[in-house]
Image (cartoon, rainbow, N blue to C red; front, side, top):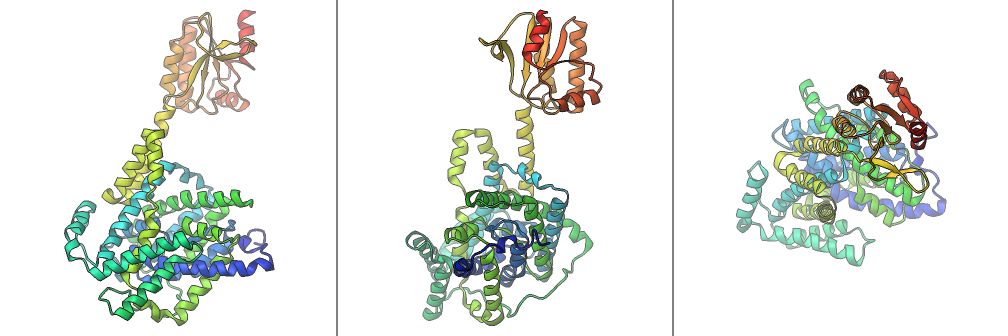
Length: 532
């Protein structure tokens, strides 16, 4: 255990501890309002969000390899939980719904640990940047819609996105003016502090100011209400076997988004600050943290890029802030939970709105539009698909779109015929004559096998040499295409050979029964054999 346990807590000089502890208090100031807000987005009691900042956060800090990645509930996970659980239990906040949320954390833990055991973290790479930009942006739109309702002080009954949006618009005249003042004012304070005093915990300051205003002025706005006092207790979720099974697809989606976003954030800060991380150890840490979440009445925990950035900006270079945050939140719940009852819902909604609006990455969408239209449309489809079709359907479509895009590009690989250059080496360029050297710059597999056969078949030469330097793999369909090509060319009296094949590729071809082909170490060697 010693080599990998508490890596993020080690190596802190005594002189740096005060700075790390102060950063932990700042992290708690950010976590308290945001975790409450994200729990509400997920359809859970506020205390569930606060419980997540105690044991699960501490477990991740102890078992991760990153010195800075902050584990916490975040907007995308909260929105995913809500959309996934509503499909199983219609009414958020009910006891059955809350039990499902605890179970969701445990199922996510199993998925994370399976990813760790079988080293499946690479699967998150199928969520390309355009998909991730669109998917998270879509979740942000979904969240913002719900927060606008709270700021306006209205309730909607529509279940689908566009009818809900229309209902919000039509109910604007019924909005609670003081609720709007509190919500918009909270957002304004956060944005102002972010500009003039970025080191201050803007969300907490804005929340305290809004709470004081509501209490002193006696404003008629909805407040959070009583929050249970005390620390979380051990608890096993009480749900049916069928419900456990129904949670699996959603758990895979949550883990994929967490891996794609969390590992990217962890790697970026590790590279910038010059310390190593073990991506596999991060998977285990997320798994263990979610076991802790499921057993301590908490919600699924992922990573927070914004809080990680906040800790980096105040100079933290360890997991001590997460440990301090866990202690601060525990003390708050044990001794001061009564004060939470007076927090205005509109202020909490304003805090969440400011946090999630930046998840709609308009500059990146604009960049995709100019750089690669196909990827822009994938991002746009995900952006619209999440609120309209639901998050699980959208993430499945996103994976399929990525797979289709990969196959589409691989089906038309870069190819070229080569000609001798001034120094005798073969370079790209059109060539004609009895010797044709054909370069295929991709794996040879089912998606591009027809392209391979068609292009070689179109060459008019007595000798055809395949430059196989860029071919790293051949599947059975590709091997059959190569076999048919060799047979067709042989029937025409055309000599076929392969140049620059790696030892691994030769072994693979031998496995497919194509080991009797003629090989050349270089294109020049093949040309010399032709001229001999």
